[in-house]
Length: 495
Ligand code: NAD
Image (cartoon, rainbow, N blue to C red):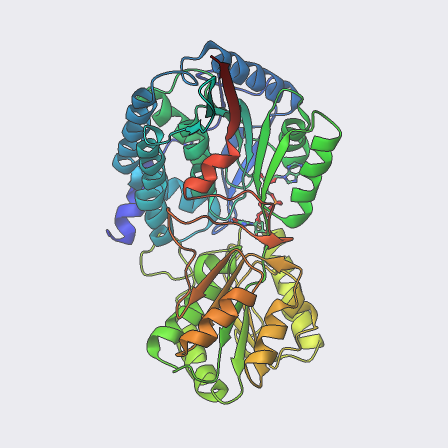
């Protein structure tokens, strides 16, 4: 990792991408409209970006359909798609510093997080799914001698991908890599707050050999480009990551258009449970604090409900406060910074209103001094509430900022009951030394991922997604992600 001056010098020379990418060409929106792109850490305008709407969606869908039907990508030998995706992974690694700086300026995320994602996970996804392509087999069906039957997997066709701002390029890669590996043509709508890295990625994909029309990037707003994509009758599958409210809209768009399949990855309010037999180690404290405040708490699986047995609470509280107060909040391009800014001023105000609500509802503010910071940009100090009522607003709603609430419990049964009492079901963490209790908790928590004795979202090999209002049956990551982008066909021969 280099130092602040190094990343600032990259920032000073960057030419920000600004146009949509459709059918292999960068171009303005048909309307000619643009929107401002703001650096949330300074409140300065970085530049303007094409504001795509239904007209651009329509030409992008046509280009995607044409590319899908001509078969240059969808029906090419698997080795060919593999070679291109592996090359794309290499190009992302070679350009990781520049992409990470763009992402940090665009989102207020720390350069450390951006580099971890863009230098590591993002290219790894393209490589992993590239490597999977020529190892994905169909099945031969048992029949009598008068027949032969096969079950084959085929790409679904044109796929719309709508992604959020909290992990801009990573969320795009989670979806693009398996969709492209499957042979689909994609239209990506990045979040309006963070369109830049997805636009830049299109150039690298072109350089890697992805044919025109297979990848299209449409910067724009949810109500314009997002809705038009969700409602388009020639989009076969939509895969969405974002809020539960907007996820619901995509089901409506589908039911009012062509009944396209919709995959949803949505919000969370994840519990971090410390049972009475756990040991409060430095590792546990590090997990408690980083799982809450990583990415400024703007993380769907952030462990914001910390459910702690009363026998261990004093030691735990004392130590999480100490670690939290050591976190450095500020300049995102400085590798020593732990927390960057909130994504927008509006979001900062929303998070601050939750902090005020926590105080009004009687929770005890023990770290964070009322949240806001006296500096340019949209920063919030990491904040901890103790004595949080499990039925209060800050315990129930997804805040999506650095606001951790501690709920005290007496025994495992109460911990489990409170952990389950939420409309979300994305993730949970449990600390215990007892393997039997670990299994009991894991089996009874209605969530897509459970970490035992450590916060984890799993890795590239493990499916990620939510139960209840956190997701649909679709999963990102692992071989399961391919299921969103492949359909099953039976071919039966009478002999
Ligand atoms: P959001 O739902 O506001 O926006 C997500 C995307 O949907 C953006 O591209 C946006 O432009 C688009 N959109 C917004 N309104 C739309 C509309 N009316 N029609 C069509 N598209 C529309 O979410 P966000 O604020 O960008 O992201 C934060 C949310 O994402 C949180 O709830 C978080 O938990 C969730 N998230 C979930 C996961 C997961 O894997 N489950 C991962 C990251 C983030």
